[in-house]
Image (cartoon, rainbow, N blue to C red; front, side, top):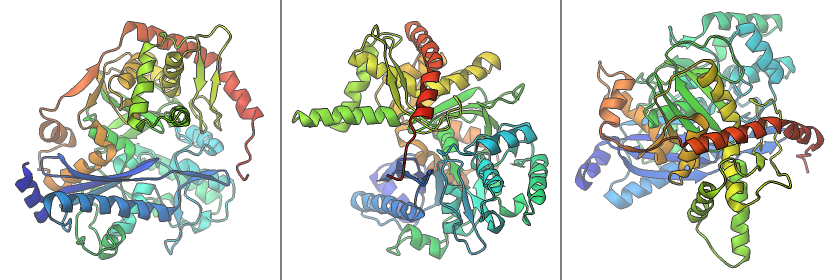
Length: 538
């Protein structure tokens, strides 16, 4: 759209706004009817480790959301001389999983427990055995059952259990609902009914009854909605929560709230079978849309859904770039100590590109990026490590290559199950997230790890916030014949091009050699977890 068309779209509310609460940043993206971004805003935030729990303060949620909306409104006002009072549709997404439990008055019963916590091993194993369906530690149902096993006093008082996206949506609309993709990270979904799995609900209710809990699981879980379904409208109170100035009008329709995995699939047009995407930032996860069911239960593989309800195999690693970012920041401190100011983006690009000049296997170096626990390798806590032998080739290029490889190490273990044991077919993988910001580098590393071409779309930089804005637009513009797959292919991504990097054999061989070293060295990480206890209260 040209300047005048965009101005009219803003004035008439022919737009869609998506906001995603990520691990380190809350981002908002406003798009027009052509799905092209008009304005954006962001707010930096960070989780806290308090009393043994990774958490965020809920007050910070609203500070961040208001800051994002304020920035979007300011950008629109400055560019188009029109305040953002009307919006065609809204959508919210956030980090999947976790535990937000509320009582009958809507008060939070326990600190928000994020996906990053690995303290539900007992519940995870018990539920996986009971359901014969993998229940990862970060899933909401694992947190709930662990709280029950721990006899936490608040459990009998729970009247609503939801995720971060579900919480925001509830406060803005009054509706206790979730998009099906987000719901599939709370409790297993039956893709034939697009609802929670009935047999497993009954089995869990049996556990509740045996423990003397009066409520049933359906009493406290959000309702499930596929993409394109109406999920309520912005209330007057919700409008003031988002925009305290009072300009934003109530009554805006909202799409079902989704998780960052679902919005990543949308943002990369990876919702059809034989497609997949990898989101690589604070955590890293691969989403592969399945043609057929897996042959058995794997603790390394989660089964979730697309925002329209198709079955997806998800390989999720808690750790990706956090340790790598810390090293980059250390190099940044060094340059500042020398009196040299280097733009952060330039510093990342310089260091990432060094990795392309390293030995194929990283020169015999080894790193573990475990800032938090890692379920794929059975580490309940994290201890970032860097290890080398006297014979290792300790250069900056090898150092950076090793840390980029390490960011994908746990993911690789899970992906090998899908590609080598289950023979899942992939035509191409789409990448998005901070790992791919430096052109070619992240794609080369990922292509080596997965032995499949890796593409980054032009819209990948907008990420999940753009993805949830597209889902809001889908609610607004879909027709009777528009499946989510066809809507994305024909109306959103038609004519778009991306950059594709094919795997290089030397990189494949080098990554394989690194992974052999990585697997052998896990005993070192295990020893570090056992030997180095951290007193977080100091």
